[in-house]
Length: 134
Image (cartoon, rainbow, N blue to C red):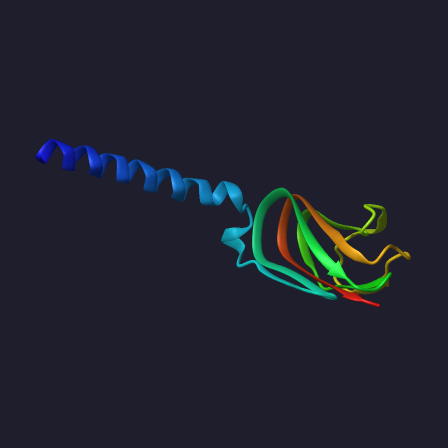
């Protein structure tokens, strides 16, 4: 009976290590206190104290309207961060580097499920922006 328990313990430990090590690969922004609020007609994204972030993130967001307003509040120390928004027909309606302060509008698009893409390149700092139905 004891060898079975030893094998079971080793298998359990291996599964735990595999699952835990996979978490950081699946969410590269996890160490930077991500806050993502994804409600119909209102999307908000924030990470703080980011260091050397290079990744692309995509979120589906429901916009019942045909336009959106985008509010920036990013404190970039190094690298790049860009937000690009696609409408329900996958047409690009907005793209801009994340900046310290700006309020802009998207182009007219098709209502429905939009896509918000954030691309970070060796980014250090805090990224914060909000997208709302216009």
